[in-house]
Structures are given as structure tokens and as C-alpha cells.
Amino acid sequence: MNETWSEWIAGTAVVGSAVIVAYILVVMLFYLMLFIVAFRTIRRDSDALFFQYEEIMHSSFSPPLSILVPAYNEELNIVDSVRSLLGINYGTYEIIVVNDGSKDATKQRMFDEFDMFQIQHQVPWSGLNKETMPVRGIYRSRKHPNLMMADKENGGKADALNAGINLAHYPYVVSLDGDTVLDPNAFLKIMKPIVEAKPGEEIIACGGSVGIANGSVVDRGYLGDGVRLSRNIVVVMQVIEYLRAFLMGRIGLSKMNMLLIVSGAFGVFRKDWLLEAGGYETGTIGEDMELIVRLHRLICKKKSKARIAYIPDPVCWTEAPERLNILKRQRIRWHRGLFESLWRHRGMILNPRYGRIGLIAMPYFLFVELLGPAVELFGYVFLAVHLFIGDINMAFSVLLLAAMILYGSFLSMGAVLLEEWGMGKYNRPADVSRLFWWALSESFWYRPIQTIWRCRGLVQAVRGKRQEWGDMVRKGISVGQGGDGR
Image (cartoon, rainbow, N blue to C red):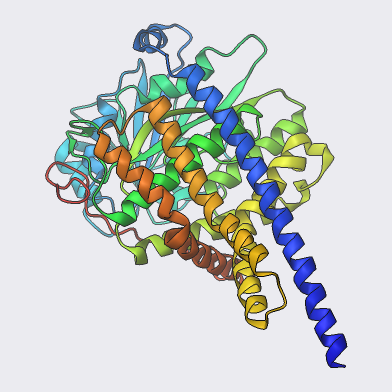
């Protein structure tokens, strides 16, 4: 009996090791492909000149924009965010701030700074087949006629965006977070793929990279003296994580028209496609990804050649959590949102009717992004148990553990190199050096912590535990509060 039990354990060690090795190899090859695509794209597009954006601004093909800013408890950042919007380089646009039942002074800050007055009580119906929470009033600024604010009862970010869609007058709708600080040319950059689309090519949505503003000084809604890296290690690791996600993942997926996420911090959408898709879904945490998946489903249903584009150049900057407990809540919420989006559209996974979205993109997000942390955690536990039992080859175990730990670090280092080669936003040698070496350390502490958090988010999602979009503790990123006080 003992011999049979020992043989079974030895067999599980061999099979388990083979599965883990195969999984790691597939993931590494996929990431390597994304890295190569991202590198070629960045090197090709890095020579774009500003006058090209100027041509877009004055082009008759540049459509007017409705900029939606959902705001919940954003009293520290809302004024700077709106100021940055009022100073953007673009032709015709309107700004619609949606105060989603804030408990702080967000509404009063808007009133005091921009001299708002009430223009109507009810939101007109735009054709969106969704009801929103009641709107208390709609206001316009006396100082800036293209600035409006809707004050409504709390219904969550998706509900606030739907209320903004109902108010929007223009054919393209931009969704922004209330704490977003924009690049002055953000809208010229993000509209470039739409304006320059080839005949017969239809771009129905476009997203761009999001940077972290902690450590930089924001003056009158803009980064005052360029991008600076925070001294807070938690923020530094998030910068590296953002670089890997945006510069590697989304560029590669976009080139193959398999992009499933346009960041809720900044994305532009064709309003008619938004209305036909049904707007934002209020019953999910990850409303940004869920909408993109639904748009892909609509593209396949209509047998359209429409695309969802992405540009690698940072178009906006946001405040990142500076404490691990706040970051933990955010990442658990993100992972739950990923689960909910995939579950809602589970019929698309491995379904040939949806082409590469169903056969490649959805499986990637399922097996790598969603289940990857569980597989990684299982791998650590599996190796530890069998090393303790002593029925697995030590040299093989060391190599496997090294591969599991180091491939993430080298991917992160590669993302830092991509930023330096193509974007060059972190132009101080000390900042680049710190990013590079902290990227090397990622898999030894930051990645395991993230793995545990994401596994917890997966468990919560499977159990169906309800969680709102929640409160985000802000320090503020305006002058004198540059993320870490520098």
C-alpha cells in the first residue's frame, strides 16, 4: 500500500511539473510575441512630430467630442482635472462632469471655481436603453459655456457614464476618471487613428497609455516640470506594472485587433456604437472591459470590419495608491471585474463564431490573466510540498522555481526598456535606474503579494460577494502635493 501511495505521489510530481513547465513556456512565448510587436510598433511610431497633431486639430475631419468625467468624492483633484480639460489642444468639445452623489465637497468645489448655474432638471433621452439614478440638476459654467455638470444620486461609475452619454451632444464620447491629469495633446493623439483611418476602415473606440502622476508636480492641471518618479516603493512598482500592461500587453493585442480593455481612465468611443451596444453595464465592477467585449460581440454580429485602436503614447496621468492596503482593495476589485466580464460573455470563449476574439483573446484573459495567479500559487505550493517530501529532482525544482520567479521580472525590465527607447517620459538617469532595478526585484516580493490578492479576488468573485467601486483614499496631486511631497 505504501509503495502504491509513493508511486502515485511520484506520478503526480511528474505530471504536475510537466503541466507547470508547459504553462510557463506558453505564457512566456505569448509575452515574447507581445514584446516583439510592441517594440516594432514603438520604434516605428516614436518619430511622430507635433505638427502632425496640429494638422489633426485644424482638420475638417476632426469630429467634436463630448468629454464625460464621472466624479465620486474627488474634491482634491476635480478642479485640476477640469482645468486641464479646459486647456486642451482640440477644436470643438464639451465637458460634462457627472457628480455621482459625492459625500465630500466635489459639487461645491465645481460651483466655487467655475461659477455653475442650473439650466434644467431632467436629462434628455438619447436613445440609450438604460435608466440611470435620478438626476437632481444640470448646471453650466458662466465662465466656460462648454462646461456642464450633472448632479445625480449615487449609482456607481457605469451609471454616471450612462447619464453623461444621455447629455452628450457630439458624435464621439470620451470617458475620463475624475482624478485624471491630461497631456495637453491628449485628444489630438487619441483621435489620430480615427481621423487618419483608411477608406473602409472604421475605428469605433480608441485608448491610450495611462501614467502615474505621484511624484510629479501638477500645476494648473498639467505636469509642471515633466514626469518624476515617486520615492514611494509601492508607487514605483505600480509604474513598472503599468508600463508592462500598457506598453507590452495592449499594443500587441491592439495590432491584432484583440484588445479587450480600454482604460476607464481615458477612452474615446463612437456614440452611435455605444448606444447600439447599450451603454455601460451597471451590474459589473469592470464596466470598461465589459463594454469593450460587448463591442467586439456587436462587431462580429454585424460582420463589420470595425476596429478598436490603441496608442502607446501616455495621454493622461492618474494618482496611484501609496499604501498596500488601498492597493490591495483596488487589485481585488479589478480581478473581480475581470471575472465578471469573462463570465458574462463566457459563450464567446473558444467559440469560432467570434474569430480571434473568441479563439485567442478571450482564452488569453481567462487562462493567463484570470487563472494565472491561481496556477502560479499552485506552482509555489506544489514545489514546496514535493521538495519537502523529497520525491522531485532538486536541480529541476530550482530551474522551475527560477523560471517562475524571473520571467516576470525580465518582462518588467523589458517594459522599462520599451519606455526608455520609445517614450522617454522618465528622462532622468536616476529615475530610469531605479525603475530598472526595482523591476528586477518584482518577482521576489511584489508579484507574490499581487498573486495572493488576485487569488482572493477570484475566490470572492466565484462566491458572488458584492463589492462597489468603492472609496479611493486621495492625497491630491496638485502643486505642493506631488504624490510623495517632493
